[in-house]
Length: 228
Image (cartoon, rainbow, N blue to C red; front, side, top):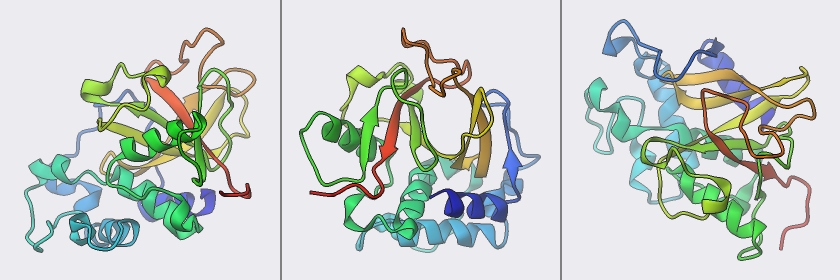
């Protein structure tokens, strides 16, 4: 997970953005990395390899719809690929049938919570409270976006909702973890997330340290664990 995530991050130019969300602005819509030659094709590989057979999204790229037509850069929100990136990394890392590959983060967030509750089994991810578990390399940290901004761990599972997850790639620096995510600034981008001295996203009372992002759940990767 870590090696693949960092490989893709380097391919996109090793972007780091620790600024508040919404502050990134490309010079023009055509300056978006996802629409650059060589990179729109890479986004297409994420879609093609991450989605299950028959999914219409499997034909998307960083600038093409399912029929191969170039869509306007202003409509890229309809083709958001951050969940496809996570699914791609999981697929290439060898998760096999034990990860719920999806174009929506909420699908695997909900399944991870259901696994934590004992409502399902056989998956390589389980949900952990941000104040109770310190994310490790390969884990995912997730939040709700837009209408789901105030969603919290106890609200899960919560049906379909807009969300985002990043892959933890480094926990070696005290007080912060490094994560990479897809479709962040229209690229694979790294950011640094503050954590408590013992490595958690939130204090024991549930207060998330990161004032930029409302992290609500850690999806622990159960690599090497027996799978039902």
